[in-house]
Length: 143
Image (cartoon, rainbow, N blue to C red; front, side, top):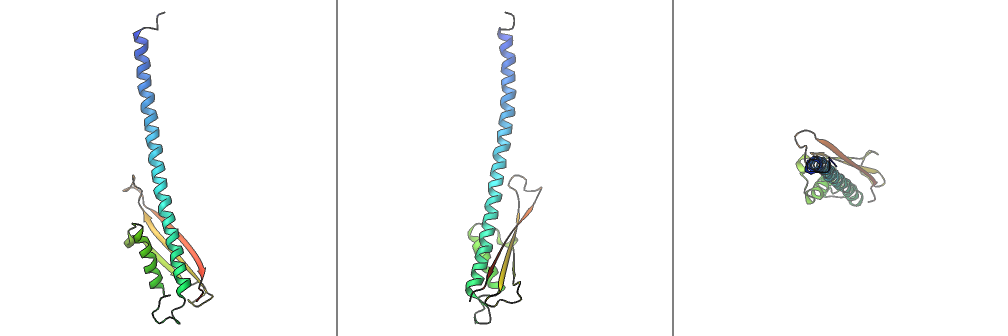
């Protein structure tokens, strides 16, 4: 048997090293992609919760006309959203919070809409791409 000797084993060993390198490369790319997707989904979930918190705050604190401290105003809703985001280790200076009253005013029975936008920099492509993540929530002012 001519191919069963040491020369044949050396060729197979080289093939195994190449297969191992290709497999490890694929697994590293897969793991990095999963980590990046997890971080992106975390940021989106936090922004969604922050928008919901802003709407809840506006719904409960009501209109600025009946509230002498102006607790239902856009500025107080924005500061509530930013406080929520800062507790989740987000850079609040890059965050954009837009508070709108689609029905015209912040009176009871009218709607309030909070949109939160955040520029997400991927962990491994930080200098290459910035993705803007936006979350939106709508509710009716109760008080």
